[in-house]
Image (tube, rainbow, N blue to C red; front, side):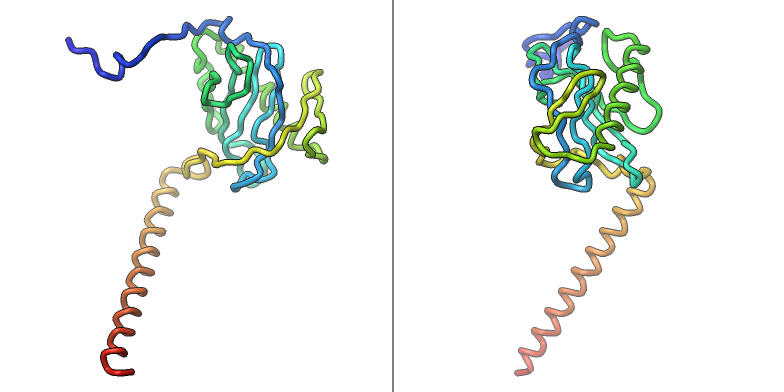
Length: 198
């Protein structure tokens, strides 16, 4: 039996049990989106410094309710590095897989999601969002950091149903084709005028 190349390239595995998610959170900061459709909304909200947990919303609905988010633990180095190096799971909609984190009991995951969403709602209600200001969450003061820039990994399905996304895609393609046809037709007419000597 041949081992797939993807598996042979793995140099090590990390065992994930409950202790893997117990990491002191160094330099936690609240961040707000500075670009994209989420501008002004929270991008990163720490809520459990002692164990290293934060919530990172990806998309919001029109009322400001979070549609999809990452629930993350800072990992062994204690630094918030988002999904690059932290232990994160993505959650969407209202039905969650509470067994998403290996080694954590589903009740613990449900509690963390609840704490994260509560912290997120608290941060959404603050008036002053100036870097350096502090917000108290679960008895801990968290500093507001510089805004989060860069792109958000939001997909159409984060904002609407797959059927609506398909319809939107087809409309965009149709508009693109119509515009291209109009451009070509205009160029052809312009070339005909030049050929006739204007």
